[in-house]
Image (cartoon, rainbow, N blue to C red; front, side, top):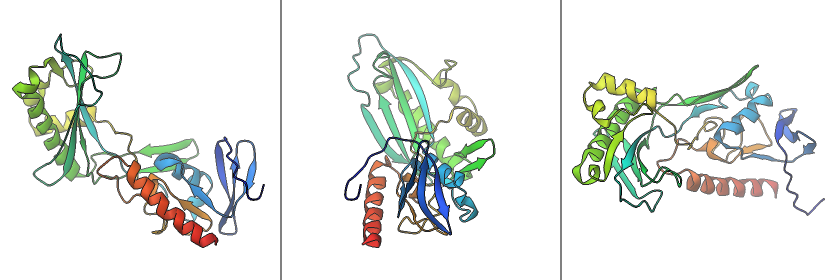
Length: 269
């Protein structure tokens, strides 16, 4: 009803596109007319919905530029008698010799039910590699394409070497009976035995994202979040960040969404 806010719990299927403009939304159970549609489904789902709605024919940048923070994690058996109290107890930020920023996090316990296992993670905060979200007849294709840029390969190698040095430090190592690098239980010492190519291969096999996906629509929107080539639809989530931020994306996403909200409010007045 006019003047009242309605919150609907339903899954969006498509945007309704007519004569160069988005004029509504189709959910699983209904069709809604709209003067403006604001996409806030995240860096993976927002481009999928836009592409599924056929908007890729009008904007070929949708889904390009996807990024996340690549990460490597070691596990450690905590010495008997140690008492784990916090899920994250140590955070350290540093730079490689090339200026790439990375973050190390030491977790006192893997989870509430795994208090005898600690974790050490290192993540690359300033990656250059880019991936994509695409739609095919059989469904979506999502690729983070991590470490596809040689700069990231070298930076991640240096960051992992720094982590190896950190966990090998006597003051840290004495708190753990063993530190291992993969699900097969290989000891951290095995990473010191190979050359850089061996290290790079191991990193690629064990690399994981941090669930900070961003930037899949950064090239597809204007500075105010309006989807280029189409009227009536804005994007106001991590999709529009120019690159994955060197921090948790929540803050940059909130600030960007507020700026875009002010733009939409001005456009509708």
